[in-house]
Length: 183
Image (cartoon, rainbow, N blue to C red; front, side):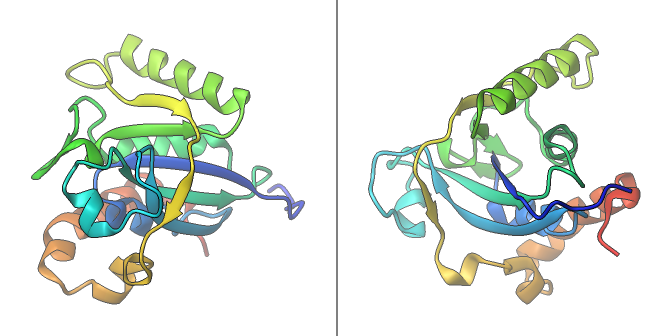
């Protein structure tokens, strides 16, 4: 096992509701923190209510601080593509709108290249029933979501949305990526 250097990298991903993504990624070994937020829109300091209208252009995203000596960006992408449907434009399940789009906001040319390459590999391997529509764009300004969104699943696991939507994604992730879980 690699020894952490303590230097963290950032990854920013959107794939539907940020509660689902946060609940999964915060369980990965090598992840120091996950922050739910908004990126890719035209309004400065958007609120959840504004983003939910679909008129700000923002996507619900998570920003992951991770140790690249313990967890690679490709590992993050593999989890990302396993826990959402990257073939549906502006939709994840019942969540519909541009705010739920599948998006990878890259923080470096290396992340951009890795994301494009991974999408090409998954498409070539016909991993999904249709082509991947995930947007790959340079990291715009990131706005952390309101405090009550942070750690939402941990604090609200019994809430109906969490039981019906988030819990199954977490269970699927835990089964498929058991060797990547924090101790």
